[in-house]
Image 1 (spheres, rainbow, N blue to C red):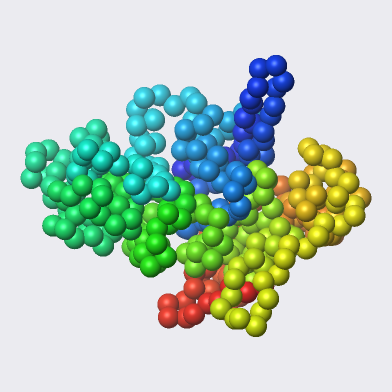
Image 2: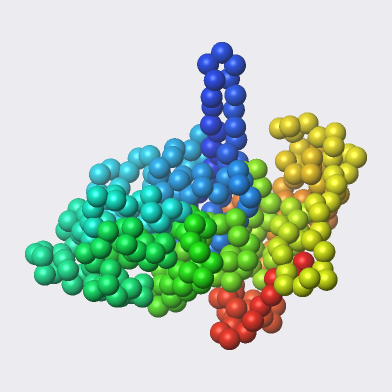
Length: 364
C-alpha cells in the first residue's frame, strides 16, 4: 500500500516564552490529517485568529517542528528526511502565503521569483526555455506573460501578484498547494479571480489544495471538505455542505451566525452568553470552548470531549452528541467526501462543490 503524500499524526505544537516565569501557549493540539495524492481534493481549514491555522500550515510545510506527534512525508518523519528527500518534498508540496507583496523583493522584477525555482531545480536549460516555461506557468493562472514579465511588483495589482505566486508554485508541478489566507489581503473584486484559479488547478491538473482561511463564505464556495479549528483543537469537520448548512458544534454555529446576509430586516445577532456552568471553566481543563459556550454543563468542565460522528459526513467534539459513536483520530478522514462515493445534500456535486451556475447562499 502506497504511503500518503502528507500525514499529521496527533500533532501538538507548544510555544514557550519567559525566563523567570515560563509561559506555555498550545497553538495546536492533537491534530491529525492525511493528504492522499490519489484523491485530489480541496480541503478548507477555518477558524478565527489564534485558532492554530497558520501553525498547522507551517508544521505541514516543515517550517516548524512538532512538540509532540509526527508529520510524515510519504511515510517518513519530516525531521528524518535526507537532502534528496527534502528536495523532492519541496517539489511535491508548495505554498502560497497571505501577503502578495511581502513575498517579493521590490528591487527585482517579478521574473525573479519564477527564475529562481527554475534554476534551483534545473527545470529548463537556456534563456529561451526558461522564458517559455515562465510564460506557460503564467498562462495557466490567467495572466498574460507580455503584460506581467519585466514589471516590478508595485506595477501589478494584488490579484496579479498573488497569481504570480501561484504560477511559481506550478512550475514544480506540485501534488499539493498549501494556501494560507491567499485572498485576505486582496480586494473583494479580485478574490473571485484568484479562487477560480485555485479551483481550476484542482479540476484540470489534479492538484490538491489545503485552503486556510478565516472566511467561512469563501471556504464554502471553493472546498469539498472542511475542518473548523478553535484554540488549536478540532471543533468540527466533514463535508462542507452539512458542516456549514447544519453545524453541530456551538462554535461552528457561532461562525455561521456571524456571516452578514444581504437582508436589512435581519438583525445581526450578538454572540450568545455563556452558560453559568461555562463561566466556571478552568483554563486548560475540559472543553476549550466551555467559557464561551451557551450549552456548557458539568461534564464539559471535567475532560476534553472526543470527536463524535454526528452524521456520515460530519463529526464534532462536543458532549451534546455523547450518544453518537466516537471517531478515533485514525478514522477522521472517513467523514470527508473524498472517501465516499456520494454526498449528502442536493446542492453539491460529487466533489462537494456548488454546481456551476447555481447560486448558494450561506445562512444560519
